[in-house]
Every structure is written in C-alpha cells, then in structure tokens.
Image (cartoon, rainbow, N blue to C red; front, side):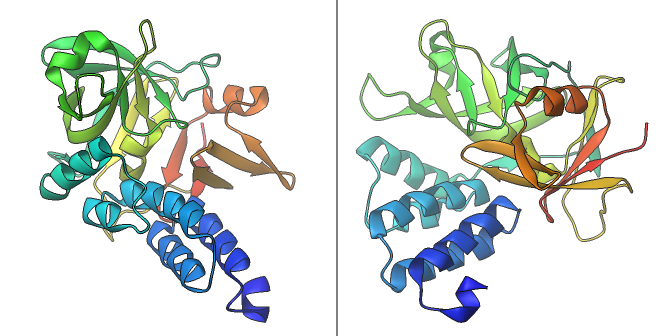
Length: 264
C-alpha cells in the first residue's frame, strides 16, 4: 500500500523487496531493492541486501557487479571464480532421497552426513548460515581465496548420493560445528519426514507441485526461517515450532515461500 501511494519512496520499496524476497520471490525482491537505490535509498545498505539475494540466486556475475563495491579482495576473487563455475546440483532422477536425523535442540532442521574428499562429517542443516561451514581440518579440500588467513572458499560435497558442486564455504573456528545452510537445499523443495528419517529433494520444474497440506506462510532471510502463526512471526528456533518441525512431515514450497505441513 505504501509503494502504491508513493512509488518513489525508497524505504517502502526496499521493505517490499525484502519481504517478497523472503517469501521466495528473490528476483522480484532484488529488482525492487535496485529501484529503491535508484530512488535515493542508502546505496551501501541496499548493496548488502543485494549481495545476499544474488548469492541465493547463484548469480555471481550480478554479485561482482553490485555497486558500490563492498566486496573484499577475497570475496571478489571468489565471486569471479563462481561466475565462471556456478553452483550446481545433479539430481539423477526427478527426486533424490537423503537420510537425516531430526533434532530439537541444535537450532537447525536436523543432521545429515556430509562427505568431502572421502571423509564423512555430521552437519546441522542451519537456516541461519549460507553455503557450508567446515572445520579447519578440511581446509585442504576446499578451493580457498585470498591470503593464507582467509576463511572464504568453495567446496564440493555429497549428501547421500547427491553431489553439490561449487558451494560457498566458510572455515569454522577451531572446534566449530559443521553446518549446511538451508539455502543449499531449499531450491529443491525439500520434503522432511522425521519418522522415516528422510529428506526428499525435487528437481525444480514447472510440473512439480507440493503435496496437499496445511500452508504456513514463511519468511527466509539472513535471520533464518520464521513462520506465521496466529498473526505472529515465530522463528524456527522457537521451542513449539522446533518440536513441530521435528515431529511432522513438511515440505518447503520454495516458489510461494510457504511451509506445507503434510498429513501424517
């Protein structure tokens, strides 16, 4: 309503862009934020928003082209490399099934086994991180960017029989937990089945539709995932939400930005 009333209000336009991007319309959200900058919005803060959105889209040509240039030399090197070698997931069939263990106390959506160069690591699926977070012991298996102290990299990992190539990687502090960002699997409309201990990834195309169920509006941004219950946005880390997601079957509808609770 605010954008309709004043189409050139950069604050309203940027807010609408953030909301739509968090609801799954990332490309539309990015366009609105670009327009907010054109209409006089704070260029630096809006550029930071755009960097995250273009990374979510896997559009690293756009990442390195964002102005003003806020990238460090290592971030620019990595962005230029990824522009030529974009992230890729090869699903052999229309769907791929992964094994996971649901959890209620780690702030994530459960734990999967990640294989990198022959080593298997238990990794939390965390909606608050991007890409993968790996320990320093795996550093030799990651393409690193920047100087010797850099924590920026790109990794190729396998979860079950599915390979995730050229995924943004961060080196965790000593003793830090291994994590897989929810953004790695969210584009493939994952269906979580805690009782069976499986996550099913679906090849994104125009024919796939999520199963029928109870739709819960969701927001997914740099703060993680929030769900709308009773007019209140609750984080996925809230105890009642965490219990629900670790005990109910659910699908992430990446196009509409909804979480669909499925029948038992």
